[in-house]
Length: 353
Image (tube, rainbow, N blue to C red; front, side, top):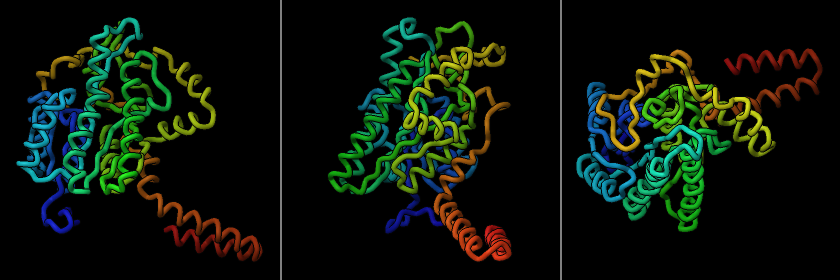
């Protein structure tokens, strides 16, 4: 596969915030495997160096730029540094985020504001930095990583839920502006489900037990695959995982049902009494971790490694075509009689392989 940009002969460049662990790291490694040059952005030098070494060991090319996404001037410098080292940024992915667990009134104001500054304003800052470079070129893609919580917020995560709702509204507003200006720059948004990442180890918590992702849990590689799909096919938006799609539809068709489901989940579904999980606690709300972080959190034993919904989303055209063929074949067979129907279905099975 030719990964060079049309008319340039150079490999495309992607910049990813939150690249030191979790979804950001998994996404960085995926883009690198597919021939992209990768700009890695985060606060923590230790985590970023782990991601850079993993990419280098796999034969990829990456450049590290330290920045706190809540500070736009640091992101500007990081973008300049990446473009100087790798070339013009073709795709910018806003993936950085953090969280605080606790009921609203038990979360200190400073912690609530910090989550908002990183998880929401970090996306705003990253989008601004990217568009300032892409709009003059009239090309490029920005991917904002949101969350399934926008289809129904979770208790104990009011700061994170509110920030992700804001990301959705912000993205839709700016995308409308780009469309109005007939810009070729594309802005897309992805909605991951609960993912097995170090987010839950790094989150601040005011609960007695360690926090955990609400079931079902998916591996970060699935989300990275969805982000790559959204970035390279100019999707308007992409839900990842069957649970995300289900909540999206329930929100539209029966809003009250989401409240019932979240109520059944309760607080208990977001905490775990597990010593191994407790031992991996490493809150990083105000300071980056001093320890290497991986893409995965401590829930490998229960996390899904595949998503049938994402497969259907990737092969939507093929699925629609084959369903059309099947429906047409059945109609022809019914019109022609039972024997013809059996023969037609046999041909359809052969067609599907």
